[in-house]
Length: 209
Image (cartoon, rainbow, N blue to C red; front, side):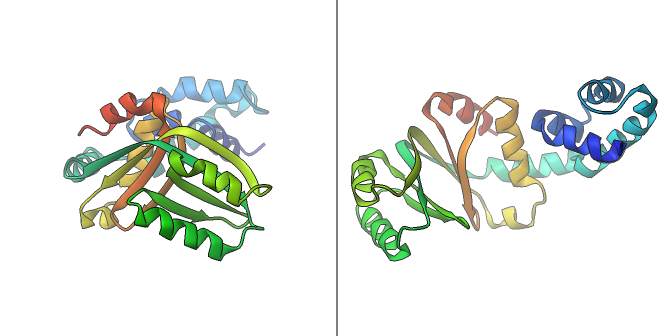
């Protein structure tokens, strides 16, 4: 078995471990034992796993200076919160022109309207007040829908573009608090994160720098 491959796969499935590795908060020996117990490796692979952990940690480690720079950048950001938001996933049988027209209509009413295009689906993020209209317009084309969501928009300074690790730092904080990110997208210095309403208080605590 490839110890490095198994180690990377295990850590990849546990984002909190990855975040803690980046901050130097992990007991490597104990992590190596857990990786061995949870996979196809055995005790003879312990040293190889330990080396793989150290190498992996080097690739994700955030130095104190980098973390300080990220925190300083985020402290200058502004937050915009919108509750009663829904997320609707549509299949690709929906004409794109219909979606554009709907987004334009939503924006004219000064409500949030975002469209994410995937390879096989479209995702609409908007006010819950439009859900009934969307269900009627795209009946038979809805893959999934979620409501009672909150849209969090983080507006940062242009330095965001040239600050490595800033976005992953934010996502890591959410993972540490057990906050599930339902949808996310970004546009230049704006980062949009959609979460469940029940997680709003925790999210506000996370985003207070």
